[in-house]
Image (cartoon, rainbow, N blue to C red; front, side, top):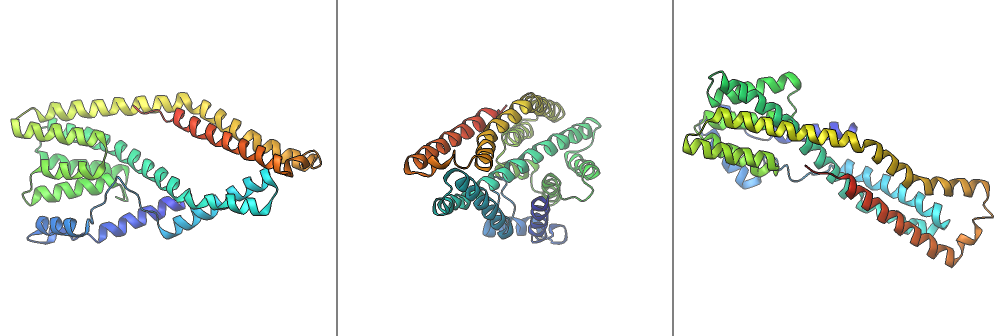
Length: 286
């Protein structure tokens, strides 16, 4: 929760650095120049950890790996060496935060499409449709910290200064790195050029994305129990070692020898392989 709040504050500070294009006569041009020179608009294919997040992930990872090393080897030097694996933890934490951010954006994008579809079906213009989508999302997120709300405001501002909506959507799709948004931007641009039925395109797209998210949620529910069982099985060897070390330390004494260290290292490698294998199996994409 604390990491999420820090991420929101960092995103808000980044947004405050963007010039207020609503108060500049050449707002879109200034926004474009700023974007090209410093890439100030967020790139959702990357996630930057703060110094605090980096430090915490390294410390927590180091402590966990040190504990695992001491549990298996009962040797301070080997445990410290294994504890250095905590240096790679920011990479995994960064990927986790990035996946969470993209999943949230995908959900908000579906809600924005539902709102846009309703507005266009009611006869509103594209610009008013995007404005209505911003208002609807603000009902779900009164603080307005959502990435989707921010991007919709940018699109509305660009349209207000005469930039084609398809250009703004293509820029957002490029920075999002998400297949659904890219597909929608491509289809939307094609419809604008060829005079296609925008109402039907938006309605069909929102329906397809909604069905896709529903399938993903169903799969998550179906594998939730298996995921818990996998975690329990992975934790069992560590709990068994803790129990044996506490109740029968003499029984574990042969594992302190060189042969025992080799066996422990092999066991750790097998556990790591099982963890990677299970993680890959549970990562079902639609």
